[in-house]
Image (tube, rainbow, N blue to C red; front, top):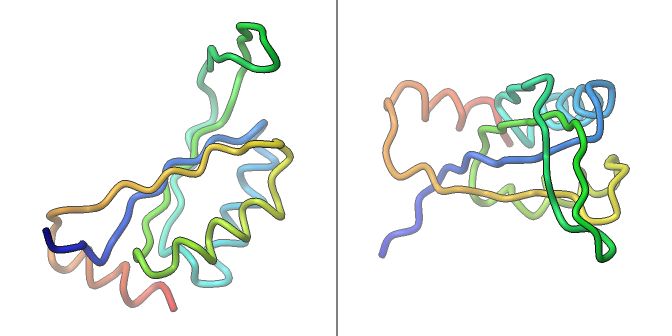
Length: 107
């Protein structure tokens, strides 16, 4: 199976301030062409042996596959979570001008 060149990366953050800090860093350093910040969602999860619930902010990042390791490293430095959610999904198909825009917006 052929690997795709582009990824959509899903990340959650503790709050809007943290998400914006991460988003600006990724775009300014051309690790992402765009970051969509979705202000509030509720997460229900296991942590330290308990089921917990909390508000989080979602980020959806458009980038290239070959930048994932650098993007992940940058996010881990800026993120407050001990184990941040950083998950890449391949973009199998897409509008060619949009995919070119991702390529042009990243290094």
